[in-house]
Image (cartoon, rainbow, N blue to C red):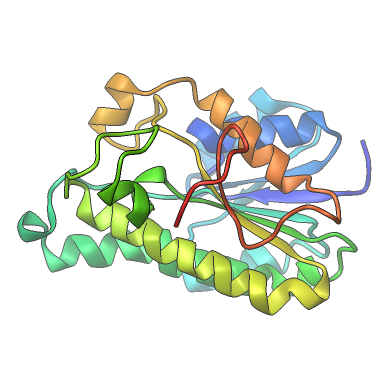
Length: 238
């Protein structure tokens, strides 16, 4: 164990739980952010030494504020919690679905990040990792790329929310750089999680993606900031 601490949102399952496990294995105390207390406690028990439960719903402002009072200092924040309600194109997606998706994937990230900034500022080496998506890359969505066939407008709410998250990654990186922060986004690739039926059926091992997130979470002081990286460390175009 060491004195570094991390918070991973949505860490009771999927990629988030694997990220929490990897950071705990590195000796960090890891707060397992989970909306559901029971599922979060189960994840804590599975991860083992170093894991701590933090009940946290990223869409609940009062709950976020309460959670932030329980963490005095934070070295790593991984904004992992996210939803993908459907694979519909924009013309077939309701405004309500857009709102619900952005509430978690965009506004939730802003709410959690801002609430925990005081704790992060107490760290000598603060790191923020935003779990994005390769499908949020406008370049990849309109040109040949290594991850998916371009030209589809499906999953509009999810993909556009992650594009907004990418923009926030850049803006946070620029405004926090003078305080020693490293803020980066990760494209984890399609993973076998319950994010949506397509991912569940065709995705690869989520543990592999978690390695990329852990790498960004533990960046040295000369590491990059304001970047967008694939799980294997290669840059992804915006």
